[in-house]
Length: 238
Image 1 (cartoon, rainbow, N blue to C red):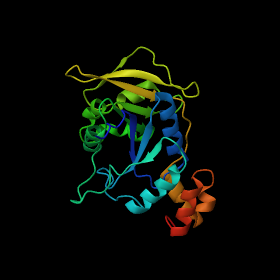
Image 2: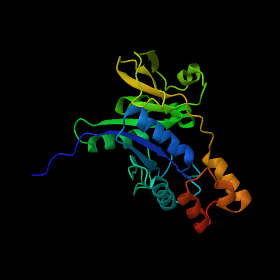
Image 3: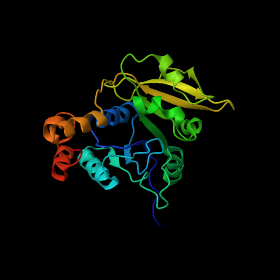
């Protein structure tokens, strides 16, 4: 008889990862430390509904780069939960989270990790108001970002309410918490990582690589070395 898999605290971290960069890694490491997560799942998306043009690199290339970016980083894992669908339909985060939660062992806790830019666009996502109640949000905010900006970005019908102070699992990472409430009275925790000064953009990296005709000059200190080498070897973004 097989023993049941142990319960885990896991955060889903979806995105294009086009390419995965040091900013992505910094956000994931901070979330893992602050909330005592067993794993952060990096899930390159097959087809983003709000990006009709799609990613610049293929899904296969983005998976390969993400695998290289995470190599040797304990607790950061590659996930194919958001892989392209056989039907060609877009990937919706709510559906992916619902599936992931069903697959986790009993007693496990699933979170949804978002960078600041992704959170500010959350209200445009399908089923956005339901997402925090499937997987509580962890938002990596910019230092000094006003709370009112975060409240304005919430999906319609959700309100942010004060909660008792939550201590970070690591003294190195600041963590703040509130409660989200929907019109039915359901509540879900909302976590904020307010001290991440990570000024790295995948779009900016692609532009630099294109302008410099190569990854080495543009990606230095912005990309994990394995990702930089992969981009150069495959001629991506040039």
